[in-house]
Image 1 (cartoon, rainbow, N blue to C red):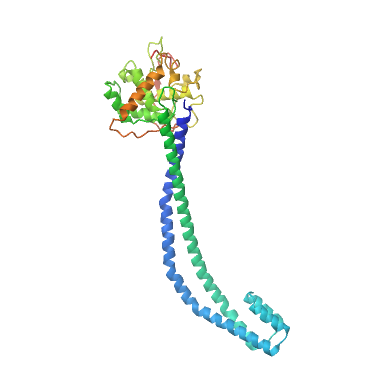
Image 2 (image 1 turned 135 degrees about the horizontal axis):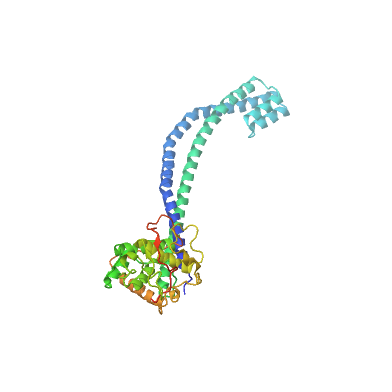
Length: 392
């Protein structure tokens, strides 16, 4: 026995992972462009930085000369003036203090000759100019390097997230494959992903000698089962097998083809007639909504936007107690081993699909529906209400 929500949970995880992958993949190209642009800009400013450094060299040399002359003047002042105060002034000059602090120190110590004052004035004139030019060069280089680093990190982050998203998609797909491998009997859940394609489903009916009497092409009807399966979370391809059983290969979808009743809805042991539906898509929707209602006592959720075609079925006493196709015996129909008969057809469809030329790309079902599905025509009901219990 599989957990009743196993298939739906795997599909939900796949949906989340695929949505994240789509979002993150959309970020990849912009991140690549940004990184390429940052590297291009960084390469373009290198000649400019070299030019700025070359322009700054005369000022740097002038400042170095000025510093040397200041050192010389201070030494001469010490030799001629002597004293501890001048020693302190020279020590201040040789320390890593700023020029302003040095100037303040010299001012406090007094005047030690015009050569010292002139050397200090020259030094203070050139140092701000040199500092500004060097700071400008460093700022340009640092900003460019930071832009390249940030762009590269962003690209790395996006690529890493895409890798994680792909891993999550693969894990969910493996889970769905495991579900399909394990769901091999009538005791497997009603909810979960579909496995077959619409063409495989339609081809099986034709290959089995079926003569459908329906209002739309058979492959369109099969796709309706997959689409409504996505909307309701029901395994649409197994529901299609249920309808093959109910209608004799879609040869009898009610009293007339225009009834569009593919699952004996409304027919019962004492009923003269079942329900009829305005079009094929509505008939399929009614069937899959009803299957979800049998399974899920909380359906429909707030995010399910399609009209509920059989609201009377919400009061069924066995809601939530039906989880597997086996459980439809005595609830959907009174016929013996009803679920086994449905699943026998489904397994025949799976076997047929292995030789059908259509690639077996899974069409997955979702836990809940989205708005905007076509075929929301109202259902026409005879006097009886509810799904009924049949002799199928």
